[in-house]
Image 1: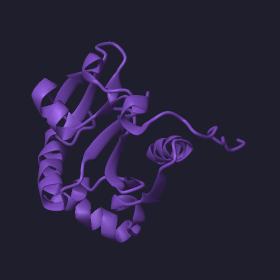
Image 2 (image 1 turned 180 degrees about the vertical axis):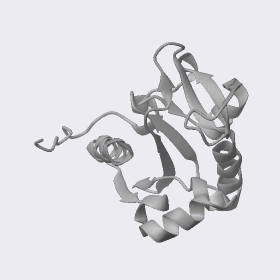
Image 3 (image 1 turned 30 degrees about the vertical axis):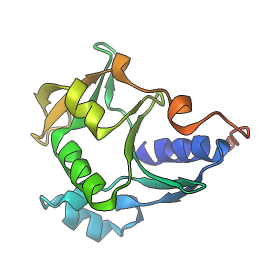
Length: 155
C-alpha cells in the first residue's frame, strides 16, 4: 500500500514538472530495513522521496492509511515529527507529509496544529499527533499545478 502511494505522489509531482527520486528506507535492503526498525535512530523516519524543480529541492514523506474518515484527522508519529525537525535543521531542506488524499502538512504544521493522540494505531505503542484535515495545505498550492497529465499504469 505504501509503495502505491509513493508511486502516485511521484507521478503527481512529475506531472507538475518535478524530478523525483526514491529515498529513505524504501531503497534499503530488507535486512537493513529490519535492523533499522529495531533502533531509535532518526534514520527510521527518513522521508520517502526527494524532489527537485529548478533549484528547489524538497523531501517528501508519504503517509498512506494515516487518516481517520470518522474524525477527519491525519495521524503522524511524534518520533517522526521530532526526527524531521532535526533533518530540516541538518539539511536546510523542507519536508512535506503527503497523505492519501494529497493533503500536505509540514512537521511544523503537525506540531502546532496536532493534538496528542493515542499510542499506536498499529500496535507499536508509539504516540501520535492528530491533525485536523482543515489545517492542511493543498497539493497544488504546495507543488504547483499540473503541466502534464498523470500517466496511469494499467492494472
